[in-house]
Every structure is written in structure tokens, then in C-alpha cells.
Length: 245
Length: 226
Image 1 (cartoon, each protein chain N blue to C red):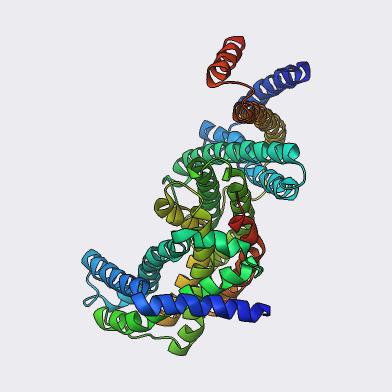
Image 2: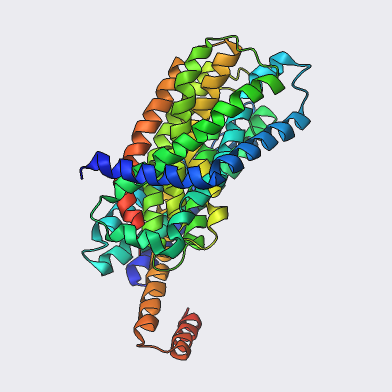
């Protein structure tokens, strides 16, 4: 791991600890008590899981652009697309889980099919499907198929968002309708912002690590394909790297 | 040959193949009928007309979706025999013409199934639409095209994967979710007469335009993926 990455990780961990402190030190909420603190984790994850898909889309476009022009850059773009999709699924899963905890505390039920939850579930489904397709496809074609699917998924998100909003305004779900916060109390703001920054940095760190791992895997696969390394040599190199790490 | 002639040639070939074997249509029709019967086990359509009206739109589209999936999986399998697909790639004809021809053919097959299935559905589920039934003449073709255009595209995409039969529904369902929502809502609006289907027809139209464009633009990439 390069030095600056270690520095980034250290800073991220410090910010996460500070964010945790702010979240715990924020004033108790009147109706929900301490349970509402899950909100400080829910919000950053939910917002960030709408950011990573667009990094994934950008990387997919770059991949398709470079595919027949610059193989090395195309492979890098593909690795980045994979990394950002995995972090999207991770963050969306955490966002869904914390959202359900919140829902159980605030509304008494784990899940309501309201507009935001349904859209969010669809986002999660789309990127799980993206990862599934990657794991199903035969090597050599994975990247193209994945890039095409990423474009479809990214087009789908805004359409989902709008249509589901119309759906639920047409049949208003009266009891469990609106989200929990229409504007937040200023006393909660610092905790929200610090956690936002900390989790964004953590997400970026994960994407970076995943990208580096995928790049190494690609390079090893290339080396083996070109016959530079035999299978035994490749395994020896991999074992050596594992011991190093 | 110009673009339209290329499309027509592909379409005519697919229709002729289907006319000789009748595999897709017969398979789809029987499958859809079975789904309708199985769904009738879940509730009693004859005793609760109001509830039946509420959910029939959804049931009809679910039956059609599953039926279409069986045919879509097969539609490219024909092209892989004797490496016909590779021959297509060598042709001067634009790749998207092949796609549009295939999608149109699938559209006609599913429409044929709908024409037979709709009366059966109405009889079995005792349906009397309370809204304006003529609007179904827009909703059904639009919804069918929305399913078929993405379905044909993703069937071509899953040709490149290991277990292609499993993959198609896994990709098609999440991507089609807004279209499914729109067509089910529009059909329900017509059946119950409680609200106007106009908004949902517009959503469906927007979805169809956006995804048809995306499919046509990206098909060449998928065809020459390796």
C-alpha cells in the first residue's frame, strides 16, 4: 500500500471515530430516544449509494470508448467499474438495513412500500444483478457485457425514481407516507456532516483497494495468458503476495 | 439495400421460421394459459369481482412476461446453430437491423399470444372493464414492445454467458421494473375505472423511446463482444 493511501486510511479512521462521537453526543430525540442515532449512519450510506453508480457509469463509458483504442486504459476503467459497483451494493445494503431498523423504531414495521424505499430497493436489485452478470459471463467478454448493463442500469434509475414517485402520489400511503425528516434540527447537523465526510472517504478508500486488487488480478491473468508465467509460477507469486499482505 | 429492407429481410426470415415450426407461439400460449390457471388457485376470481379487477392487470402482465421469457431465450438460440450469428457479423448489413428485425418478430409472436389469451383471461376471471376498454389498444402494444425490446437485447447479451437461461429473467426483471409498473397501473386503471391511465401510458411511451434508442445504439457492441 503506498504511503498516501495509508495516510488517507488513518485520516478516514480518525474521522469515523469522530463522527461516531458526534453521533453519540448529539442531543436525544424527543419521540424516538436513542434509537434515532442510526439515522447518522443511514443518511450517508443512502446518499453515497446514489453517487457510486454514476462513477460506475462513467467508468463503463470510458471502457467502451477505450476498448478498441487503448487496452490498458480500458482494463483500468473496467476494474474501476467493478470496484464502484461492489461498493454501491455494499453501501445500499447498509442503507437498506439501517433504514429498516429506523422504520421498525419509527413506524413499528420493518418495511413499507413507500416511494423512497421501493426506489432504493430497485437500485440495490440493479447492482446485485450487475455483479451476478459479471460472475456468470465467460472471461474475455465480461467487461463489455458489464459495461452495457451498467449503462442500462444507470438509465433505469431516474425512470424508476420518477415513476415510483407518481405511483405513490396517486395512491397515497397515508399512514407510513412521508420520510422521517423534512429538514433536520440544527443540533443534528454537525453529526450528519462529519459522518457524511467520513463515510465518503471510507467508500473512496474501499473503491481504491478493490481497484488495486482487480488490477493485479488482471495483470496476473495477462501474464499467465501470455505465457510469461506458468501456472506454478503464478501460484508462487500469488502466495508470496499473500504472505506480504 | 437500404436500412428498412435489411430489417424486413430479417423479420421475414424470423416469421418464416416460426411459421414452419410454430415453436415459440405454441409454447408461449400454453405457458401463459398455465400461469393463468395456477394463479386462479391463489384466489377465487369468480366470487370477488372487485378484487379480481384490482389485481387482474398485474396477473395478465405476469403471465405474459413469463411466457415471453420462454420464447426470448429461444429466439437467439436459432442463430447460434451452425454459427449463423458469426455469419451475421460478417454481413455488411448494420447490426441494429438484425436486432430490430428480431425484436419485431418477437413482438408479433407475443401479440399473437395476447390476442388469444385476452378473451380466455376475460372469461376465466369474469372480467368486465369499468374504464374505457379501447385504451387497452395502446397499452397492450406499448407494454409488449417494452418487454420485448429489452428482452431481445438481454437475450442476445446472455448468449455470451455460461447459464443463459437463468440469466435472462435476472437481468430483464430489474431493468423492466418501471415499465412493468406503468403497464400494470395503466391496465388496472382501465379495468377498475378508478383513475386515468393517461399518465402511465406516457411513462410507458417514455420508457419505450429511451430503451429502444439504448438497445439500437448498443447492440453492435454486444454482438461483437469478443
